Amino acid sequence: FVQSLRKILFGNTFHVFNYEWKKSCFKFREPYSNLSYALEAERGGARAIQMAVQAHIIKYLLFTRPAESCTMELGEVGDKEQERALAAALADILWTAGEERSATISLVTSERCFTPHLDYKLDNFTERLHLFTFKKKDDTRKFIYEHIQCFNEEGSHGVILFLYSLIFSRSIVIQEDLDITSTHLLHFSLGNFSCRQALLNLLLTGRASPNVFNGSLLCDEDGNPLVQPLRGVLARSDVGFLHWSREQAEHAKLPVVGSMLKTPKLPIWVCNINGTYGVLFSFNRSLLSDWKMEHLFHLYFYNGQPTQGTTAILTITHSHHWESGSIDNQGDPEKRFPSLEMTIRTKWEGAAIDWNGTAPFF
Image (cartoon, rainbow, N blue to C red; front, side):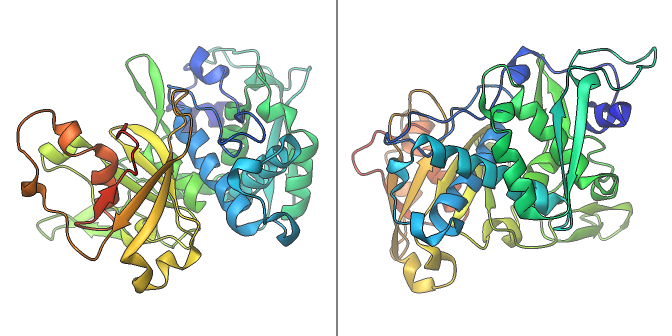
């Protein structure tokens, strides 16, 4: 099974994770601080996974944790509550990937579990995996909580272990999720591995759909039938996704995110902004169900960068439209049209955005 795991990740059996990935885990900021709900994030490809888990941590803290503990602010999360939130978030993602019937967790043991083939490159880690499968979501959560150090401690390979668990939870169905545009989950470029959209969709929806549009695409732009359908997102999930890239926008190649991802069940979005990931969220559950709430509302943004000391609070006015032409057309495009603002406008077209005194940083 380890060869299959490598192939679904890398497309071959000889690639191994680099140092950036190996040192990545799910480590929170300081307990009881302004960012006590927030994970520290890496610069490399693991950041997409960390931010997807971050979105599910926010889901737990704001919307799904037991009622008696829901009175706390996001800035009042203690170390035990951080661990509970992480366990709940990881279990939530794995259970959804297992179609709410089972979840599999991979941990590392001291003994090597298989003898590798000649074309398999050892990493002294994957060969020592031990799998634990659960048939109840709460048992999954409890097991992760009891072994939380395997995911949140430095040197634990926490992100890789969770990624393996995700693939085992989805099982061989993952091959059926993919299409000819994506046959594996990681993309190798400039010496690092980054997450393909299929992996991000697996984290958000439980299905490794390679595209961001709704449903499946059966024909090309000219109406000719495709040899194989291109697979998009089939159902609305709790956490959504927004995407904006200045380079793609300038070349009119920005993929249009479908309503399934753009309008999730809860007001939380993982954002891919110029290839860097962050999380946008609201405390107001009604934002997605009551159009009157969209006239004036607040969004909160966290992107995991060590330089971010507080959550950015943005005030969105959607009742009178922002005009791009009303801004001086000289100077740096990023200063005139901050990328985060352009991302928000893919969901709320023409929205006026106030950073409330914070200098736009994304």
